Image (tube, rainbow, N blue to C red; front, side, top):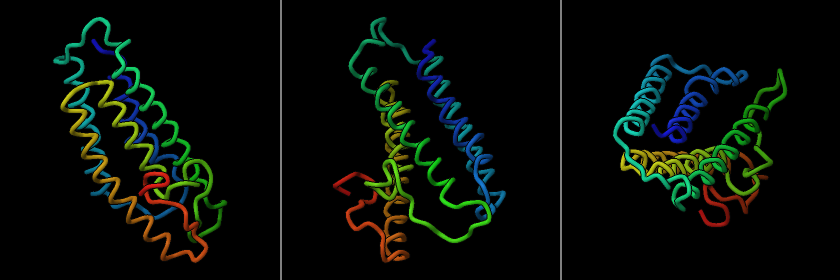
Length: 177
């Protein structure tokens, strides 16, 4: 059994599908159908990733020292740190009782509007590299496409909403895009 990829998959599923919603303070209510569909998708994706890794994937004995595994693990951990820190910044933009929108600052938000999206994409790319499977690579590509479009939309919204929005900040990839 390949413990590392399973642990990574279950931590990503647990974080986004089960833990994060309870950490959000205030904000707009999420329609139940959206919540249910997202929850089912996360559970199904997690099950498919874990099922492949635990029942079908075969790795050589030296896989834990292979450059793909090591690089993927470092990318996954880096993405996880960026994602957790960015989510923390977003959750704490407003003080209790405050309303309205604010510009996120700190961490990767100094470079990109979609720091949380960058973190999640980096996690899944790292996971795909470490897990070395078509399944994880497909989900990494899917995640990158969906979250890149969200990052661009958020970036455009910030630029339109705030006159003082940092002009050097990019949408998703620091200094480039």
